[in-house]
Length: 268
Image (cartoon, rainbow, N blue to C red):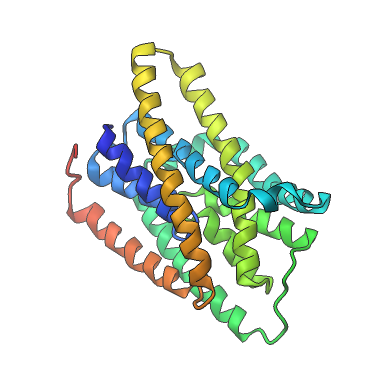
């Protein structure tokens, strides 16, 4: 991986992290096209570059995050328990799936169908939309979030689907998704960094070069993440999530065709 690739992946991460289209899935597919998917640093980068987008949430929602009652934090805690346990149990399998563009493409396609179906049910539901998230809602969102361990499903998409199926207001659902992303991605990044630098090897010449690549990617993802969040919130005032569902289906089919008919271009 080089600096240009780090910038490209940082931009992709920042733009796609909070949309229900799978940031990791996009980065895997782009890394595959660039011919760097099998590199060790890429596997680390795909997870750790998300740290920049988490800081963008903290930056934009710092007041909401700091001045809340205890039940706000308890709901977040309940929502991260299932994915925390599942991620620990299936860590090795997840690492293998991160290198499989076909799994990502199929997940994008299936997730797109689920978003559209969930939106249809949400619109048909004649009951008043809920503006609050209960403890039970948080647990259900947490359980759905476990599907995001499969690359391409998207953590944001699974939380949104869970919110729509429970008739929770779209904006409230996506904001809760933002908040839950902080501990989930934080834990995943710390685990990945620990395994990579302190269990596998420590070669200081390689170490500093890779740290620079990671820092650059995270700075870029932070900047684009701030822009992305602001755009997404404005988008939700007028539109629903169906467009993202159709986009996922088209992208999934496209990359399945790319995988079978187009070879990776190698180094960019």
